[in-house]
Image (tube, rainbow, N blue to C red; front, side):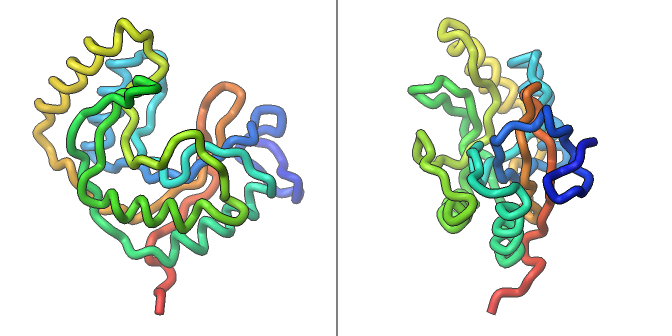
Length: 193
C-alpha cells in the first residue's frame, strides 16, 4: 500500500499506478462467476472480474479523489435498475468478443452521458456501447473459433441473465495491467427530488 498526494493510504503503490481510470459495474453472483470462468477459458492469461463499464478507461486531469467525488455524487443519485445480458457479438474493428446488454442498456447510456463530463470527461475513441467483454486482443485467425466456443458456452448457461445494478466501482489500472478498486458507490444512496 502506498501513500497518496494527500498523505493518506492508497491501495496502489505510487510507482505502480497509471493515469488510467474507469467506472464499472461488477456482475454479481453465479452469473459473474460464470462469465469470469468463461473469460479464463477463452483467454487464459487474463484475471477477469466480469463488469460493464459506465465510463471506459480514461486519463484524468485531476486527482482521482476529485473525479471520485464527482462519480459518487452522480451514482448515489441514480435509481437502481435491472440489467439483462443477451446475445454474443464481436465488434467489427477491434474483434472484441462481448455480450450485448438488452434491458438496462438505455439506463447505462444515460448514466454514461451524465458522467462523461467535468473531471470525468474524455473523448473516447469509440461511441459508448454497453457490453461485457469476454475476449480481446486475440489473433485475428482465432476469433471465429473463440466466438463459436463462447456462443456455445453462453447457450448452455442455465442461470438468470438479469441482475439488479445497485453499486458502481471507481477503478485504476496499474503497470501490471491489474485493475484496482479505489472507491465503491451505492445507487440510490441519496434520494433525488
